[in-house]
Image 1 (cartoon, rainbow, N blue to C red):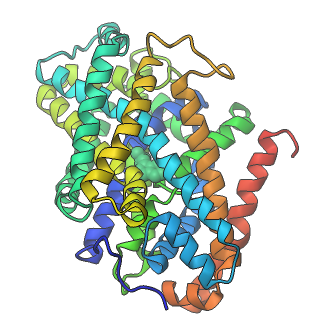
Image 2: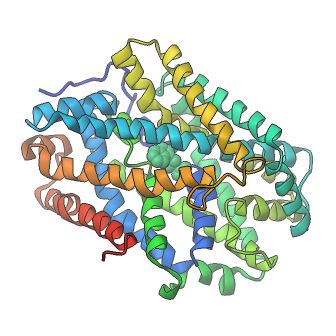
Length: 451
Ligand code: TRP
């Protein structure tokens, strides 16, 4: 018999869960990462592959991961132990939980540095630091990332705030924050898209870059990046959504809520792209200029539009908050495990896992300046961590989750947990047992040059 409640508590309602899980999905991935990797990988075709991956791989695996969490009702590591015992399977499956805990901390180490950039921009926006001149805006960004002191300061500040929220438990203040955050972020993005329409490059360059696919632009690595991003942006493959699922009341429909969350996440990413690319082209900037893309484009809009000061401050505040609601889910699997297995209090568990992540984040901060020459496989520490987690660990984790839900768990238990109409269940079952794992596998083979 599955547990009916987690020892860490439960979401107060279905709506609270949707808010928290949307908060986990929507973050820097949508607004910072999606535009710059789309720019680096040539636009439309990349976007199409990404959307295909969300539909065929991301959504079925998200349903699987949430379902496993709710059935196991513990941290991912212990959930996987419990579920493999229940299914009569090998207990080594719990190593999958371990990979997730580690992936979450690795991601948070650089996520927090980037969230630090966004925090620094709140202050810059507040003191009127934005101009309508693209070169000046770029200089502001270059100055920030060249400063190890500033990056470490903001990274530290962001980690302290994250860990102090995590200490209180995820179903306290978080719910309230997201309730206000999501709608406001949405309105601001619409405003930025409206501003982008006035730049003259909206349809012909901005929108066509984003939505006109040119498949000659992408290769195996681009496909891997698109697939990895589908996992990253939905927050899949490392136990974050499994932990959130473990706090989910039994009577909530997992499939339906997943569709809402994935839909909202995709819309936010596309809006961000529609706001940014027209600005890129109108100001003669390079779409492939890398992780600084939004920091070199959006300030131009705030520097030239009416009321730009207010909108600029608000936008970066919201971006930091969106990052915060995501980073909480990245560290929660580690914290839940320390509480369950080491008997730590939530406070102690948060401090221990937070300090480790913070230290690694300092190396990431240095990789943008004083350590920018330290490279492995031609990648800086930041690039390496990003590649390792988003392109490798998350898809591998997702693959294993799909296999576990599709092939290892007893069909009856899965049906109980999902309680879907028969037709819908069949569709999901085919996607999770065949389509998702085979697609991930083929992409890996392709990158290795075998297929
Ligand atoms: N989805 C978040 C974003 O797009 C990041 C994130 C939160 C995440 N939880 C995760 C990524 C778990 C991978 C795994 O910004």
